[in-house]
Length: 415
Length: 148
Image 1 (cartoon, rainbow over the protein chains, first blue to last red):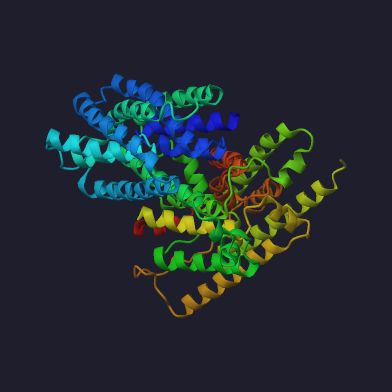
Image 2 (image 1 turned 180 degrees about the horizontal axis):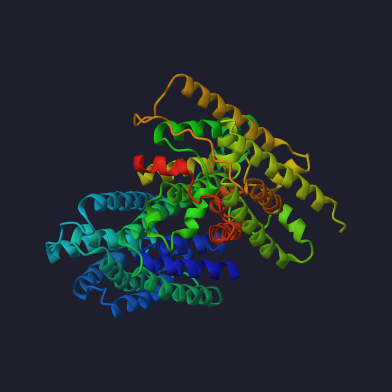
Protein backbone atom coordinates (compact mmCIF):
# COMPACT_ATOMS: atom_id res chain seq x y z
CA UNK A 1 0.00 0.00 0.00
CA UNK A 2 2.90 2.34 0.74
CA UNK A 3 4.30 1.63 -2.73
CA UNK A 4 0.87 2.19 -4.29
CA UNK A 5 0.39 5.46 -2.42
CA UNK A 6 3.78 6.81 -3.46
CA UNK A 7 3.02 5.85 -7.06
CA UNK A 8 -0.38 7.57 -6.72
CA UNK A 9 1.44 10.68 -5.56
CA UNK A 10 3.52 10.58 -8.74
CA UNK A 11 0.36 10.03 -10.79
CA UNK A 12 -1.13 13.12 -9.19
CA UNK A 13 1.98 15.16 -9.98
CA UNK A 14 1.83 14.01 -13.62
CA UNK A 15 -1.84 14.85 -13.90
CA UNK A 16 -1.48 18.30 -12.38
CA UNK A 17 1.62 19.00 -14.43
CA UNK A 18 0.45 17.82 -17.85
CA UNK A 19 -3.34 17.91 -17.66
CA UNK A 20 -3.43 14.28 -18.73
CA UNK A 21 -1.96 10.90 -17.99
CA UNK A 22 -4.31 10.31 -15.09
CA UNK A 23 -6.12 7.12 -15.97
CA UNK A 24 -3.25 6.00 -18.16
CA UNK A 25 -1.31 5.66 -14.94
CA UNK A 26 -4.01 4.84 -12.41
CA UNK A 27 -5.38 1.91 -14.44
CA UNK A 28 -2.01 0.09 -14.41
CA UNK A 29 -1.61 1.10 -10.76
CA UNK A 30 -4.85 -0.67 -9.82
CA UNK A 31 -4.25 -3.53 -12.29
CA UNK A 32 -0.57 -4.22 -11.81
CA UNK A 33 0.35 -3.02 -8.33
CA UNK A 34 -2.90 -3.52 -6.41
CA UNK A 35 -4.02 -6.54 -8.48
CA UNK A 36 -7.61 -5.48 -9.13
CA UNK A 37 -9.66 -6.91 -12.03
CA UNK A 38 -9.73 -4.70 -15.18
CA UNK A 39 -13.30 -3.43 -14.94
CA UNK A 40 -12.83 -2.45 -11.30
CA UNK A 41 -9.48 -0.85 -12.05
CA UNK A 42 -11.07 1.26 -14.77
CA UNK A 43 -14.00 2.43 -12.64
CA UNK A 44 -11.90 3.25 -9.57
CA UNK A 45 -9.44 5.12 -11.75
CA UNK A 46 -12.19 7.44 -12.90
CA UNK A 47 -12.99 8.30 -9.29
CA UNK A 48 -9.36 8.99 -8.37
CA UNK A 49 -8.80 11.06 -11.51
CA UNK A 50 -11.95 13.07 -10.95
CA UNK A 51 -10.91 14.11 -7.44
CA UNK A 52 -7.30 14.81 -8.41
CA UNK A 53 -8.19 16.80 -11.54
CA UNK A 54 -10.70 18.91 -9.61
CA UNK A 55 -8.12 20.00 -7.04
CA UNK A 56 -5.39 20.56 -9.65
CA UNK A 57 -7.83 22.54 -11.83
CA UNK A 58 -8.51 24.79 -8.86
CA UNK A 59 -4.77 25.43 -8.68
CA UNK A 60 -4.67 26.37 -12.37
CA UNK A 61 -7.78 28.52 -12.11
CA UNK A 62 -6.08 30.46 -9.31
CA UNK A 63 -3.44 31.51 -11.85
CA UNK A 64 -6.03 32.21 -14.55
CA UNK A 65 -5.03 29.19 -16.64
CA UNK A 66 -8.48 27.77 -17.23
CA UNK A 67 -10.67 28.72 -20.24
CA UNK A 68 -14.05 28.35 -18.62
CA UNK A 69 -16.35 28.76 -21.63
CA UNK A 70 -14.62 26.26 -23.89
CA UNK A 71 -13.93 24.02 -20.95
CA UNK A 72 -17.55 23.82 -19.83
CA UNK A 73 -18.79 23.30 -23.40
CA UNK A 74 -16.16 20.63 -23.94
CA UNK A 75 -17.05 19.01 -20.65
CA UNK A 76 -20.78 18.99 -21.35
CA UNK A 77 -20.42 17.47 -24.82
CA UNK A 78 -17.78 14.97 -23.77
CA UNK A 79 -19.75 13.93 -20.70
CA UNK A 80 -22.59 12.86 -22.94
CA UNK A 81 -20.03 10.97 -25.01
CA UNK A 82 -18.40 9.46 -21.93
CA UNK A 83 -21.69 8.20 -20.57
CA UNK A 84 -22.53 6.56 -23.89
CA UNK A 85 -19.02 5.16 -24.10
CA UNK A 86 -19.17 3.65 -20.63
CA UNK A 87 -22.51 1.98 -21.46
CA UNK A 88 -21.15 0.62 -24.74
CA UNK A 89 -18.00 -0.73 -23.06
CA UNK A 90 -20.04 -3.56 -21.51
CA UNK A 91 -20.68 -4.94 -24.98
CA UNK A 92 -17.00 -5.11 -25.95
CA UNK A 93 -14.46 -7.72 -24.76
CA UNK A 94 -11.91 -6.41 -22.26
CA UNK A 95 -8.90 -7.25 -24.40
CA UNK A 96 -10.30 -5.22 -27.27
CA UNK A 97 -10.87 -2.31 -24.88
CA UNK A 98 -7.29 -2.29 -23.66
CA UNK A 99 -5.81 -2.73 -27.14
CA UNK A 100 -7.94 0.12 -28.45
CA UNK A 101 -6.88 2.25 -25.53
CA UNK A 102 -3.20 1.48 -26.16
CA UNK A 103 -3.55 2.29 -29.86
CA UNK A 104 -5.10 5.67 -29.02
CA UNK A 105 -2.21 6.31 -26.63
CA UNK A 106 0.41 5.52 -29.27
CA UNK A 107 -1.14 7.90 -31.78
CA UNK A 108 -1.50 10.66 -29.20
CA UNK A 109 2.03 10.20 -27.88
CA UNK A 110 3.47 10.47 -31.38
CA UNK A 111 1.34 13.55 -32.06
CA UNK A 112 2.61 15.26 -28.93
CA UNK A 113 6.25 14.51 -29.75
CA UNK A 114 5.79 15.77 -33.32
CA UNK A 115 4.02 18.90 -32.08
CA UNK A 116 6.98 19.77 -29.93
CA UNK A 117 9.20 19.62 -32.97
CA UNK A 118 6.85 21.93 -34.88
CA UNK A 119 7.04 24.38 -31.99
CA UNK A 120 10.78 24.55 -32.40
CA UNK A 121 10.24 25.77 -35.98
CA UNK A 122 7.23 28.01 -35.59
CA UNK A 123 7.72 29.52 -32.15
CA UNK A 124 6.18 29.08 -28.74
CA UNK A 125 2.57 28.76 -29.83
CA UNK A 126 1.21 27.94 -33.29
CA UNK A 127 -0.68 30.30 -35.56
CA UNK A 128 -4.00 28.60 -34.88
CA UNK A 129 -5.08 31.55 -32.73
CA UNK A 130 -8.30 31.82 -34.76
CA UNK A 131 -11.09 30.67 -32.52
CA UNK A 132 -12.50 27.33 -33.57
CA UNK A 133 -16.29 27.27 -34.15
CA UNK A 134 -18.08 26.11 -31.03
CA UNK A 135 -19.82 23.37 -33.04
CA UNK A 136 -16.42 21.92 -33.86
CA UNK A 137 -15.39 22.06 -30.21
CA UNK A 138 -18.60 20.24 -29.29
CA UNK A 139 -18.12 17.57 -31.98
CA UNK A 140 -14.49 17.01 -30.94
CA UNK A 141 -15.59 16.80 -27.35
CA UNK A 142 -18.31 14.24 -28.10
CA UNK A 143 -15.83 11.98 -29.90
CA UNK A 144 -13.16 12.35 -27.22
CA UNK A 145 -15.72 11.71 -24.49
CA UNK A 146 -17.00 8.56 -26.16
CA UNK A 147 -13.53 7.07 -26.58
CA UNK A 148 -12.58 8.00 -23.04
CA UNK A 149 -15.73 6.66 -21.43
CA UNK A 150 -15.43 3.47 -23.45
CA UNK A 151 -11.99 2.53 -22.14
CA UNK A 152 -12.39 4.24 -18.78
CA UNK A 153 -9.77 6.85 -19.49
CA UNK A 154 -10.54 10.32 -18.26
CA UNK A 155 -9.01 11.15 -21.60
CA UNK A 156 -6.72 14.03 -20.64
CA UNK A 157 -4.27 12.65 -23.13
CA UNK A 158 -6.89 13.28 -25.80
CA UNK A 159 -8.29 16.51 -24.35
CA UNK A 160 -5.03 18.44 -24.31
CA UNK A 161 -4.22 17.72 -28.00
CA UNK A 162 -7.87 18.36 -28.98
CA UNK A 163 -7.84 21.72 -27.20
CA UNK A 164 -4.46 22.73 -28.60
CA UNK A 165 -4.84 21.43 -32.17
CA UNK A 166 -8.60 21.61 -32.58
CA UNK A 167 -9.61 24.63 -30.55
CA UNK A 168 -6.49 26.80 -30.61
CA UNK A 169 -6.02 26.98 -26.86
CA UNK A 170 -2.43 27.77 -25.75
CA UNK A 171 -0.64 24.80 -24.16
CA UNK A 172 -0.60 26.15 -20.61
CA UNK A 173 -4.31 27.01 -20.58
CA UNK A 174 -5.02 23.71 -22.29
CA UNK A 175 -3.60 21.91 -19.27
CA UNK A 176 -5.79 23.84 -16.84
CA UNK A 177 -8.86 23.56 -19.04
CA UNK A 178 -8.24 19.86 -19.60
CA UNK A 179 -8.14 19.36 -15.85
CA UNK A 180 -11.53 21.03 -15.50
CA UNK A 181 -12.95 18.87 -18.30
CA UNK A 182 -11.31 15.77 -16.86
CA UNK A 183 -12.75 16.20 -13.40
CA UNK A 184 -16.29 16.58 -14.72
CA UNK A 185 -15.91 13.95 -17.43
CA UNK A 186 -14.37 11.34 -15.14
CA UNK A 187 -17.17 11.86 -12.66
CA UNK A 188 -19.67 11.16 -15.45
CA UNK A 189 -17.72 8.11 -16.63
CA UNK A 190 -17.68 6.84 -13.06
CA UNK A 191 -21.44 7.34 -12.83
CA UNK A 192 -21.77 5.08 -15.87
CA UNK A 193 -19.78 2.33 -14.14
CA UNK A 194 -21.17 2.85 -10.63
CA UNK A 195 -23.39 0.08 -9.38
CA UNK A 196 -21.73 -2.36 -11.79
CA UNK A 197 -18.54 -2.67 -9.70
CA UNK A 198 -17.85 -3.04 -5.97
CA UNK A 199 -16.04 -0.18 -4.17
CA UNK A 200 -13.32 -0.98 -1.66
CA UNK A 201 -12.78 2.29 0.21
CA UNK A 202 -9.81 0.97 2.18
CA UNK A 203 -7.97 0.84 -1.14
CA UNK A 204 -9.54 3.78 -2.93
CA UNK A 205 -9.23 6.42 -0.20
CA UNK A 206 -5.45 6.32 0.43
CA UNK A 207 -4.77 6.24 -3.31
CA UNK A 208 -7.06 9.22 -3.85
CA UNK A 209 -5.55 11.21 -0.98
CA UNK A 210 -2.00 10.68 -2.26
CA UNK A 211 -3.02 11.49 -5.81
CA UNK A 212 -4.80 14.72 -4.83
CA UNK A 213 -1.73 15.87 -2.90
CA UNK A 214 0.42 15.13 -5.93
CA UNK A 215 -2.02 16.97 -8.18
CA UNK A 216 -1.58 20.18 -6.21
CA UNK A 217 2.20 19.92 -6.42
CA UNK A 218 2.05 19.19 -10.15
CA UNK A 219 -0.26 22.09 -10.81
CA UNK A 220 2.20 24.41 -9.12
CA UNK A 221 5.14 22.96 -11.06
CA UNK A 222 3.43 23.24 -14.44
CA UNK A 223 3.56 27.03 -14.32
CA UNK A 224 7.34 26.83 -13.94
CA UNK A 225 8.35 24.41 -16.72
CA UNK A 226 8.48 25.36 -20.42
CA UNK A 227 5.51 24.07 -22.41
CA UNK A 228 7.69 22.26 -24.96
CA UNK A 229 9.40 20.23 -22.26
CA UNK A 230 6.02 19.35 -20.73
CA UNK A 231 4.80 18.10 -24.09
CA UNK A 232 7.86 15.96 -24.78
CA UNK A 233 7.65 14.30 -21.41
CA UNK A 234 3.92 13.83 -21.93
CA UNK A 235 4.43 12.29 -25.39
CA UNK A 236 7.14 9.83 -24.40
CA UNK A 237 5.35 8.92 -21.19
CA UNK A 238 2.19 8.08 -23.13
CA UNK A 239 4.13 5.95 -25.63
CA UNK A 240 5.83 4.07 -22.80
CA UNK A 241 2.56 3.37 -21.03
CA UNK A 242 0.95 2.15 -24.26
CA UNK A 243 3.69 -0.44 -24.67
CA UNK A 244 3.28 -1.44 -21.07
CA UNK A 245 -0.47 -2.01 -21.46
CA UNK A 246 -0.02 -3.86 -24.75
CA UNK A 247 2.56 -6.14 -23.15
CA UNK A 248 0.02 -7.22 -20.58
CA UNK A 249 -2.42 -8.18 -23.34
CA UNK A 250 -0.07 -10.53 -25.21
CA UNK A 251 -1.67 -13.95 -25.57
CA UNK A 252 -0.08 -16.57 -23.28
CA UNK A 253 0.54 -18.98 -26.20
CA UNK A 254 2.87 -16.44 -27.79
CA UNK A 255 4.62 -15.81 -24.50
CA UNK A 256 5.42 -19.50 -24.02
CA UNK A 257 6.72 -20.07 -27.58
CA UNK A 258 10.38 -21.14 -27.81
CA UNK A 259 11.49 -18.24 -30.03
CA UNK A 260 9.72 -15.69 -27.84
CA UNK A 261 11.28 -17.12 -24.71
CA UNK A 262 14.79 -17.20 -26.16
CA UNK A 263 14.58 -13.63 -27.44
CA UNK A 264 12.52 -11.86 -24.82
CA UNK A 265 12.38 -13.88 -21.61
CA UNK A 266 15.63 -15.83 -21.10
CA UNK A 267 18.77 -13.78 -20.78
CA UNK A 268 20.75 -13.57 -24.02
CA UNK A 269 24.00 -15.55 -24.28
CA UNK A 270 27.06 -13.43 -23.43
CA UNK A 271 28.29 -13.23 -27.01
CA UNK A 272 24.93 -12.03 -28.30
CA UNK A 273 24.58 -9.36 -25.62
CA UNK A 274 28.14 -8.16 -26.17
CA UNK A 275 27.80 -8.11 -29.95
CA UNK A 276 24.55 -6.13 -29.67
CA UNK A 277 26.18 -3.52 -27.43
CA UNK A 278 29.19 -3.28 -29.75
CA UNK A 279 26.91 -2.87 -32.76
CA UNK A 280 24.94 -0.15 -30.96
CA UNK A 281 28.15 1.77 -30.17
CA UNK A 282 29.07 1.67 -33.87
CA UNK A 283 25.56 2.59 -35.01
CA UNK A 284 25.48 5.58 -32.64
CA UNK A 285 28.87 6.72 -33.92
CA UNK A 286 27.99 6.35 -37.58
CA UNK A 287 24.41 7.62 -37.47
CA UNK A 288 24.68 10.40 -34.87
CA UNK A 289 28.47 10.84 -34.64
CA UNK A 290 28.26 10.42 -30.87
CA UNK A 291 30.23 8.26 -28.46
CA UNK A 292 28.20 6.13 -26.08
CA UNK A 293 28.47 7.16 -22.43
CA UNK A 294 26.02 7.20 -19.58
CA UNK A 295 27.63 8.87 -16.58
CA UNK A 296 28.09 12.21 -18.35
CA UNK A 297 24.38 12.12 -19.14
CA UNK A 298 23.59 11.38 -15.49
CA UNK A 299 25.73 14.37 -14.46
CA UNK A 300 23.86 16.56 -16.92
CA UNK A 301 20.56 15.21 -15.64
CA UNK A 302 21.54 16.24 -12.10
CA UNK A 303 22.08 19.81 -13.34
CA UNK A 304 18.92 20.11 -15.46
CA UNK A 305 16.82 21.84 -12.76
CA UNK A 306 19.37 24.68 -12.58
CA UNK A 307 20.62 24.72 -16.15
CA UNK A 308 17.75 24.96 -18.65
CA UNK A 309 20.16 24.75 -21.62
CA UNK A 310 20.85 21.12 -20.71
CA UNK A 311 17.26 20.21 -21.52
CA UNK A 312 18.29 20.11 -25.15
CA UNK A 313 21.40 18.01 -24.54
CA UNK A 314 21.23 14.71 -26.43
CA UNK A 315 22.67 12.90 -23.43
CA UNK A 316 19.76 13.80 -21.20
CA UNK A 317 17.31 12.35 -23.74
CA UNK A 318 19.52 9.33 -24.36
CA UNK A 319 19.63 8.61 -20.65
CA UNK A 320 15.83 8.86 -20.44
CA UNK A 321 15.64 6.46 -23.37
CA UNK A 322 17.60 3.83 -21.43
CA UNK A 323 14.83 3.69 -18.84
CA UNK A 324 12.26 3.40 -21.63
CA UNK A 325 14.22 0.46 -23.12
CA UNK A 326 14.28 -1.22 -19.73
CA UNK A 327 10.52 -0.80 -19.61
CA UNK A 328 10.10 -2.47 -23.01
CA UNK A 329 12.32 -5.37 -22.02
CA UNK A 330 10.63 -5.81 -18.65
CA UNK A 331 7.12 -5.68 -20.02
CA UNK A 332 7.82 -8.11 -22.89
CA UNK A 333 9.44 -10.50 -20.43
CA UNK A 334 6.35 -10.20 -18.25
CA UNK A 335 7.96 -8.58 -15.24
CA UNK A 336 6.31 -6.27 -12.73
CA UNK A 337 7.33 -3.91 -9.96
CA UNK A 338 9.94 -5.54 -7.71
CA UNK A 339 11.38 -4.48 -4.38
CA UNK A 340 13.67 -7.48 -3.99
CA UNK A 341 17.21 -8.00 -5.23
CA UNK A 342 18.96 -11.01 -3.67
CA UNK A 343 22.47 -9.52 -3.69
CA UNK A 344 21.61 -6.24 -1.97
CA UNK A 345 19.13 -7.98 0.34
CA UNK A 346 21.88 -10.34 1.45
CA UNK A 347 24.15 -7.36 2.17
CA UNK A 348 21.54 -5.69 4.33
CA UNK A 349 20.89 -9.00 6.10
CA UNK A 350 18.35 -8.89 8.90
CA UNK A 351 18.24 -5.08 8.97
CA UNK A 352 16.09 -4.78 5.87
CA UNK A 353 15.63 -1.02 6.16
CA UNK A 354 19.39 -0.72 5.73
CA UNK A 355 19.05 -1.71 2.10
CA UNK A 356 17.80 1.66 0.88
CA UNK A 357 20.40 3.91 2.54
CA UNK A 358 23.00 1.39 1.35
CA UNK A 359 21.85 1.72 -2.25
CA UNK A 360 21.66 5.49 -1.95
CA UNK A 361 25.22 5.64 -0.60
CA UNK A 362 26.50 3.23 -3.25
CA UNK A 363 24.83 5.39 -5.88
CA UNK A 364 26.58 8.42 -4.40
CA UNK A 365 29.96 6.70 -4.76
CA UNK A 366 29.10 5.78 -8.36
CA UNK A 367 28.00 9.30 -9.25
CA UNK A 368 30.94 11.02 -7.56
CA UNK A 369 33.52 8.50 -8.75
CA UNK A 370 32.44 8.32 -12.38
CA UNK A 371 32.39 12.09 -12.71
CA UNK A 372 35.81 12.41 -11.19
CA UNK A 373 37.11 9.70 -13.51
CA UNK A 374 35.20 11.07 -16.49
CA UNK A 375 33.34 7.88 -17.36
CA UNK A 376 31.75 4.64 -16.23
CA UNK A 377 31.38 1.12 -17.56
CA UNK A 378 30.07 2.36 -20.91
CA UNK A 379 32.28 5.38 -21.63
CA UNK A 380 35.56 4.09 -20.17
CA UNK A 381 34.91 0.36 -19.92
CA UNK A 382 33.58 -0.26 -23.41
CA UNK A 383 34.05 2.73 -25.72
CA UNK A 384 37.34 3.94 -24.23
CA UNK A 385 38.86 0.49 -23.96
CA UNK A 386 37.83 -0.29 -27.53
CA UNK A 387 39.89 2.75 -28.61
CA UNK A 388 42.78 1.43 -26.48
CA UNK A 389 42.85 4.82 -24.73
CA UNK A 390 45.34 4.86 -21.86
CA UNK A 391 42.97 6.80 -19.60
CA UNK A 392 40.19 4.28 -20.14
CA UNK A 393 42.40 1.22 -19.71
CA UNK A 394 43.62 2.65 -16.41
CA UNK A 395 40.10 3.58 -15.27
CA UNK A 396 38.64 0.21 -16.27
CA UNK A 397 41.45 -1.72 -14.59
CA UNK A 398 40.92 0.34 -11.43
CA UNK A 399 37.16 0.01 -11.13
CA UNK A 400 37.30 -3.69 -11.97
CA UNK A 401 39.92 -4.23 -9.27
CA UNK A 402 38.02 -2.12 -6.74
CA UNK A 403 34.79 -3.96 -7.51
CA UNK A 404 36.51 -7.32 -7.19
CA UNK A 405 38.13 -6.47 -3.85
CA UNK A 406 34.91 -5.00 -2.45
CA UNK A 407 32.80 -8.00 -3.40
CA UNK A 408 35.37 -10.49 -2.14
CA UNK A 409 35.63 -8.62 1.17
CA UNK A 410 31.86 -8.46 1.55
CA UNK A 411 31.49 -12.16 0.80
CA UNK A 412 34.02 -12.97 3.53
CA UNK A 413 32.49 -10.57 6.05
CA UNK A 414 31.72 -12.55 9.21
CA UNK A 415 27.97 -12.97 9.47
CA UNK B 1 16.99 15.21 -33.09
CA UNK B 2 15.69 14.22 -29.67
CA UNK B 3 13.47 11.35 -30.84
CA UNK B 4 16.48 9.52 -32.27
CA UNK B 5 18.45 10.11 -29.08
CA UNK B 6 15.62 8.62 -27.02
CA UNK B 7 15.38 5.69 -29.44
CA UNK B 8 19.12 4.94 -29.29
CA UNK B 9 18.91 5.12 -25.50
CA UNK B 10 15.91 2.79 -25.51
CA UNK B 11 17.69 0.21 -27.66
CA UNK B 12 20.70 0.39 -25.33
CA UNK B 13 18.49 -0.04 -22.26
CA UNK B 14 16.67 -2.92 -23.93
CA UNK B 15 19.96 -4.70 -24.73
CA UNK B 16 21.33 -4.14 -21.21
CA UNK B 17 18.20 -5.70 -19.82
CA UNK B 18 18.11 -8.64 -22.24
CA UNK B 19 21.82 -9.30 -21.76
CA UNK B 20 21.15 -9.80 -18.06
CA UNK B 21 23.33 -6.83 -17.06
CA UNK B 22 20.57 -5.31 -14.95
CA UNK B 23 20.56 -8.09 -12.38
CA UNK B 24 22.74 -7.14 -9.39
CA UNK B 25 23.61 -10.84 -9.09
CA UNK B 26 25.30 -10.65 -12.49
CA UNK B 27 27.78 -8.14 -11.07
CA UNK B 28 28.32 -9.89 -7.75
CA UNK B 29 28.58 -13.21 -9.60
CA UNK B 30 31.27 -11.76 -11.84
CA UNK B 31 33.35 -10.47 -8.94
CA UNK B 32 32.90 -13.70 -6.98
CA UNK B 33 34.08 -15.51 -10.14
CA UNK B 34 30.93 -17.62 -10.01
CA UNK B 35 29.20 -16.31 -13.13
CA UNK B 36 31.46 -14.80 -15.77
CA UNK B 37 28.57 -14.00 -18.11
CA UNK B 38 29.06 -10.24 -17.75
CA UNK B 39 32.79 -10.48 -18.43
CA UNK B 40 31.86 -12.10 -21.72
CA UNK B 41 29.29 -9.41 -22.52
CA UNK B 42 31.73 -6.54 -21.84
CA UNK B 43 34.57 -8.35 -23.58
CA UNK B 44 32.65 -9.04 -26.78
CA UNK B 45 31.27 -5.49 -26.78
CA UNK B 46 34.83 -4.11 -26.55
CA UNK B 47 36.07 -6.41 -29.32
CA UNK B 48 33.17 -5.64 -31.68
CA UNK B 49 33.34 -1.88 -31.05
CA UNK B 50 37.15 -1.86 -31.24
CA UNK B 51 37.23 -3.82 -34.51
CA UNK B 52 34.56 -1.50 -35.92
CA UNK B 53 36.50 1.61 -34.86
CA UNK B 54 39.64 0.25 -36.58
CA UNK B 55 37.79 -0.59 -39.79
CA UNK B 56 36.04 2.79 -39.89
CA UNK B 57 39.30 4.61 -39.23
CA UNK B 58 41.27 2.66 -41.85
CA UNK B 59 38.55 3.22 -44.42
CA UNK B 60 38.57 6.93 -43.57
CA UNK B 61 34.84 6.64 -43.04
CA UNK B 62 32.69 9.64 -42.24
CA UNK B 63 29.50 9.75 -40.22
CA UNK B 64 26.12 9.57 -41.90
CA UNK B 65 25.99 13.36 -41.74
CA UNK B 66 29.32 13.59 -43.59
CA UNK B 67 31.42 14.79 -40.64
CA UNK B 68 34.71 13.22 -39.56
CA UNK B 69 33.99 10.59 -36.90
CA UNK B 70 33.99 11.99 -33.37
CA UNK B 71 36.27 9.20 -32.12
CA UNK B 72 38.33 10.64 -29.32
CA UNK B 73 39.94 9.08 -26.27
CA UNK B 74 38.87 10.45 -22.91
CA UNK B 75 41.45 12.77 -21.29
CA UNK B 76 43.78 11.56 -18.56
CA UNK B 77 42.52 13.59 -15.57
CA UNK B 78 44.08 13.93 -12.10
CA UNK B 79 41.38 12.11 -10.12
CA UNK B 80 40.97 9.27 -12.60
CA UNK B 81 42.27 6.42 -10.45
CA UNK B 82 40.68 7.61 -7.20
CA UNK B 83 37.36 8.24 -8.93
CA UNK B 84 37.39 4.88 -10.65
CA UNK B 85 38.14 3.18 -7.33
CA UNK B 86 35.16 4.92 -5.71
CA UNK B 87 33.00 3.88 -8.63
CA UNK B 88 34.21 0.28 -8.35
CA UNK B 89 33.21 0.15 -4.67
CA UNK B 90 29.76 1.61 -5.39
CA UNK B 91 29.34 -0.73 -8.37
CA UNK B 92 30.08 -3.79 -6.24
CA UNK B 93 27.85 -2.65 -3.37
CA UNK B 94 24.80 -1.80 -5.44
CA UNK B 95 25.35 -4.34 -8.17
CA UNK B 96 24.63 -1.72 -10.77
CA UNK B 97 26.30 1.01 -12.83
CA UNK B 98 24.72 4.21 -14.17
CA UNK B 99 23.38 2.60 -17.37
CA UNK B 100 21.91 -0.46 -15.74
CA UNK B 101 20.40 1.59 -12.90
CA UNK B 102 18.38 3.49 -15.51
CA UNK B 103 17.29 0.29 -17.24
CA UNK B 104 16.35 -1.18 -13.85
CA UNK B 105 13.97 1.70 -13.27
CA UNK B 106 12.19 0.88 -16.52
CA UNK B 107 12.04 -2.79 -15.60
CA UNK B 108 10.30 -1.83 -12.39
CA UNK B 109 13.18 -2.54 -9.99
CA UNK B 110 12.67 -0.01 -7.23
CA UNK B 111 16.32 -0.44 -6.21
CA UNK B 112 17.36 1.17 -9.51
CA UNK B 113 15.49 4.37 -8.68
CA UNK B 114 17.16 4.62 -5.28
CA UNK B 115 20.60 3.99 -6.77
CA UNK B 116 19.99 6.59 -9.48
CA UNK B 117 18.99 9.15 -6.86
CA UNK B 118 22.38 8.49 -5.23
CA UNK B 119 24.17 8.73 -8.58
CA UNK B 120 22.60 12.09 -9.37
CA UNK B 121 23.45 13.40 -5.90
CA UNK B 122 27.02 12.13 -6.20
CA UNK B 123 27.51 13.66 -9.63
CA UNK B 124 26.03 16.93 -8.42
CA UNK B 125 28.39 16.98 -5.43
CA UNK B 126 31.41 16.14 -7.53
CA UNK B 127 30.75 19.09 -9.82
CA UNK B 128 30.88 21.34 -6.74
CA UNK B 129 33.75 19.65 -4.91
CA UNK B 130 36.66 22.06 -4.37
CA UNK B 131 39.07 19.42 -5.66
CA UNK B 132 37.10 18.92 -8.87
CA UNK B 133 39.68 19.67 -11.48
CA UNK B 134 38.33 17.22 -14.00
CA UNK B 135 36.40 18.94 -16.79
CA UNK B 136 32.71 18.36 -16.22
CA UNK B 137 31.87 18.25 -19.90
CA UNK B 138 34.59 16.42 -21.84
CA UNK B 139 35.93 18.15 -24.93
CA UNK B 140 34.43 15.46 -27.13
CA UNK B 141 31.01 16.89 -26.29
CA UNK B 142 31.84 20.39 -27.37
CA UNK B 143 32.89 19.05 -30.73
CA UNK B 144 29.81 16.91 -31.20
CA UNK B 145 27.14 19.30 -30.02
CA UNK B 146 26.83 21.55 -33.08
CA UNK B 147 25.97 18.46 -35.12
CA UNK B 148 23.20 17.42 -32.72
